[in-house]
Length: 173
Image (cartoon, rainbow, N blue to C red; front, side):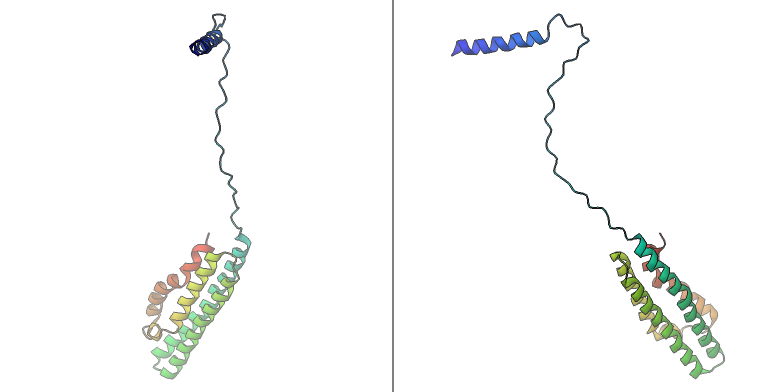
């Protein structure tokens, strides 16, 4: 058995010596054994859904709602202010109700437009925005504190971002 081991050891030494023979002028490179590659797990990448066309359509609708219907709300608020200044409480209350209805309409239109969105984030943002419009429509205190156009400007400066920001971030990009 020792003889066999000695023979194998001697063969290994001779093979090593042959590989590094003195004939070698240094120009040849000895290729090493290929590195063992570990198999990588198979990953399938699912492309992100493309909501661009749907989002553009929904955002165009929202822009129209915000331009026209919010303007109608502002007009109704202007009438309410004029009636309050003229001490015409019945007419002022009617104008307040009209302004409230305009906000309810905006809420319904925002909810309807964003319900058709393919992007779930836009749907959610639309629901949040619509809820904020609807809540403000029922907030009598909001209307009661508006007595002048300066009050209206301050109120709208505070409320408009609150109402529109949920969808504005998704439609503005």
